Length: 398
Image (cartoon, rainbow, N blue to C red; front, side, top):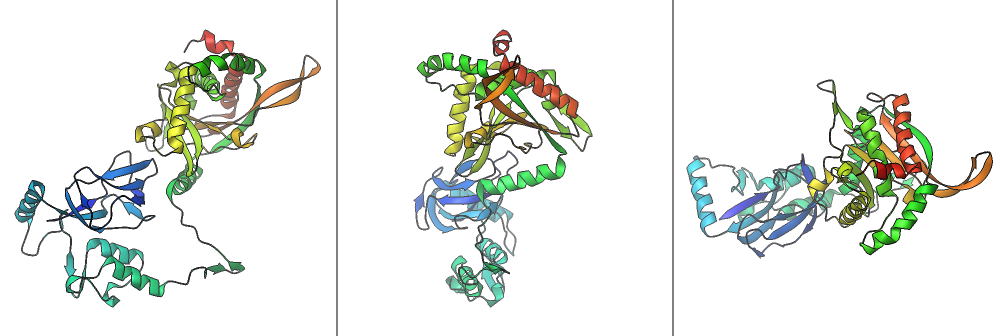
């Protein structure tokens, strides 16, 4: 019996995805729970499994195509008890004109014969099915027929141009597409303001250098990031409006009583924010180890959805690419984000004398609807206080 496997609702508010790679081809035999394809969503790279045992008769959609929840992905000729049960369900729910349930494959609307997936493809490619000659059984129009028709009407490769010369059109896909949508949403919804300050981390560097070997013996690379997370936590507790979100519909500010710090990391596919849950309950080495582990998983697209959700405040480190200051975009619906710039030795005045100190540039962006500039300055002051006096981190425990 022919059965359709549709893009399921995988939760986390995911409504669509992009087909990255098919792991089977038409004609393959598959078993229940066998990997069928990889789909990239705005959260993570997912591997979808077959709900049926049988033979793949058709793949719906090409690699790189955007699919929505409920779209048909594969048609499988299932066998065994599962197919019998599905056939019985179809008989019980059918009418004299048939049904269009999960097991229906061919939709017949005279004089055109085509599956729902082929109709959707034709609509996407703006192809009139009435003008397409079907090559399938009984004159049914196939996906290849639609693609052939589209190829005949499409402009030649490299023929696109604007008023000044040739151009190349690159589809907005994957994480870049998600980032674009998120940035646009934040820009429309947030009244964003940024302030900049420097932290003198000369003493912190001495502590880090001293403890780095101890950390390495435990398999942990001790960077500045865990210390920055530690310095942010007391500031979030003293200034709770930074650990919040704005519920516009209810006209209420939601103060979070938990501290989940998001960390933005650059990957070959774009920017991903993973989340350190309950950061206030972890020590420096715990934070260093978890940060490194999640960053590695994010870069290789092996990170789980739950590791990308639930952040209350985000830190982004653009200093790794040599930038000192920036205007980081708030990770909506959060209300603030802290940017870390390039750490370097600079000449500064100390006690009337010029001295070379290690300086950390910080850029704090905040939503002015929730937070005033004065409070933002005080928040950043607490962060800097803890960075410049690392003993405070020890006194305050985890």
